[in-house]
Image (cartoon, rainbow, N blue to C red):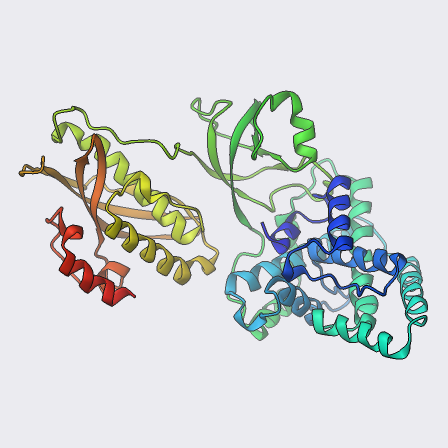
Length: 488
């Protein structure tokens, strides 16, 4: 998960152990290239600590200016965060990246604003004093360097981050201090029925709608719901406590007895699942889709309990096989299993396109030509649609779906026509998909897969109104060669 996305859990979601790890990475230079160390080697540990405060809080949290009388989204901070997140390639930043950066900024601005509505008063004198101490320490240390070295240090900061040290102290560090103080105040003055982070953003957006809209237009940020951030997590159910589910990531051995430690280290998360199914049991691998802003304002440290799970599903093992009803070959008795396989394939496909999830084509396809085509199709459609930040919740198949069994010299095949409705968290659409299914080596597999909706990938690349009745089409070298020439 990247740094800006972590900023959605900022201020409250970091632990002392996490901070120690971040400090070690920064001071040793062991960090991703896009998070270049802003501290030249000549700067002392005192200065390093000051800049580390900036690197940790700003990159994790994100924030912007919020004037008491007239709010404006701070362009300097937005540009800095976008530059950092895009590794210096702001012009190449996706719409989704721009949206995420803005959302993480507004979350902190909303946090400060919400604290004020509850009676919080900013002590700007104390904040300015804190900033002045770090600024004075930095410049005093800088003055010890020869002029050439001093200029190199100043220039390195501008080249790396696009801002000067003066801008860092006067804008960034000041607002970091504001965010930290407001967050600490909210923790000390927790409300019995606190609103969520998303609700705080919604109130803040309603209050400052014009300023935010004008900034989005200025920065070419497509409209989106600022108060919701859908994330996905894959893990193992470690414990079920009432309506809360503890999901671990990468560590499951004796998880219930170690849950507090797992939560502290960020290796587990808690989710509220209202209509929990009896099928949900400890040890199950699941994928959870949740609103990453649906936890109370004023929460600090772990555990955060995410209160709005939109959907969850069991993750099948990569070795899962869709087995035929009989060892004697394919028959109409395999229709139900073939249908289940195709629905799972469609679910994984649409979530790969819209949600950025992984799809294991090996579960459904063995023909390398078809597999290669589907990989290109997924990548093409994901590049086209994933930036809309409107994830797929689930899919539904119309009762009008059709199936037909055809016998042939190779054991026969099933034709399935599935009118699929793709339900997203905001809206949805529908399109028909056709499958051909065979029994290969004791496993049901998809041997052709065609979605013929107008302007779909298949419609454009394979052609419109194709007749799907040849289960061996991906073994036809001439046809595959022609297709490869088109898609390469």
